Amino acid sequence: MKNIAVIGAGMAGLSCSQALQQAGYLVTVFEKSRGPSGRVSTRQGEGWHCDHGAQYFTVSQPPFAAQVQKWLQLDVVAEWHGRLYEADGSGIRPKQSEKKRYVGMPKNTCPARHMAQSLTVELEQTVQEIRMVEGKWRVRSKEQEVYPQEFDKVVLAIPAPQAAALLDVHPAFKALAAGVKMRGCWALMARYLQPLALPFDGVFVNDGPLSWVARDSHKPGRLQADSQVKDVWVLHASGEWSEAHLEDEPEAVAQEMLTAFLALGGAQPEAYSIHRWRYADCADYLQQGFDWDAKQQLGVCGDWLNGGKVEGAWMSGYLLAQAMIQDCEPCD
Image (tube, rainbow, N blue to C red; front, side, top):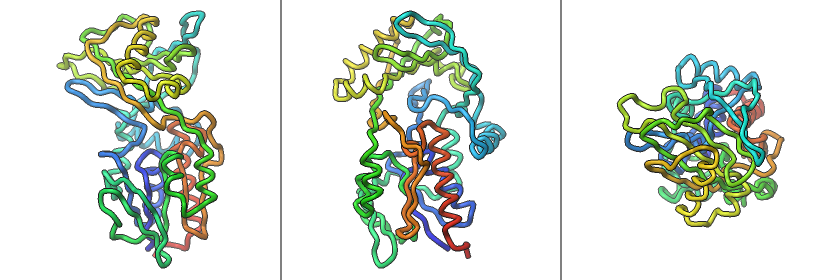
């Protein structure tokens, strides 16, 4: 039975790992963070939590639609019926959209954590090197040095710059990843003791520092009735603005973002937190889906290879797994 190492427990890595394990392979997932889910992430504090990474997802492709139906049946996903607006220099107005938007329930991390439950996931393992030794892949992390298990195949399911740093073993894949420009994103989580009297639950912002504003507490299953926090809003800065201010002091960034929120009708929060996503999205995504080298038994997947978004990440991992399964000899 073949052993496979998957580096990264975001949506792409978990999707790939789940499909490979269901096909009968032994899979070990390495994740540098304290928990799975990658950029589909939730920040938690006393009496509140907030999705400060990916905000929601839509569905268009049958394999992902089938997965979402399973999540719905398990109550780890729900449809979000948010009142959506759009704003630019000429004002703010309702956004016309027929798309169904889904969120994790009661947090956006829940679908990923459900997938991870059935997998072997090595958390807080910052992989620094992968190398082939006598026909087997070895994985070295900062925390554990060389992992004792040898692997027949390796999948990299991490942002393009992080993948490029591990791909000296494969110059073509390294060049592919190095050619993708990923951008940062500042995310601010604002808490209020009273709900804001605003007509919208989400706004697509097309000018100024912000790109997105959402009433996170409107999403299904969010705030508890006994919580002192009655409203939570998340503000995302645009990729262009975030890149221009990536090294600025967080407090200065927060004040500019809050000023832009006030211009939309928001208010100064009772408290807030700010987070810098170093690799949030791409200016130009690749559309090839994934890449797999059957000779070296090495693959790469992730949203950066498949047009972005949660569905793009999940499909990238799923499609890579299908290619690996078709390429490999049957399991014992």
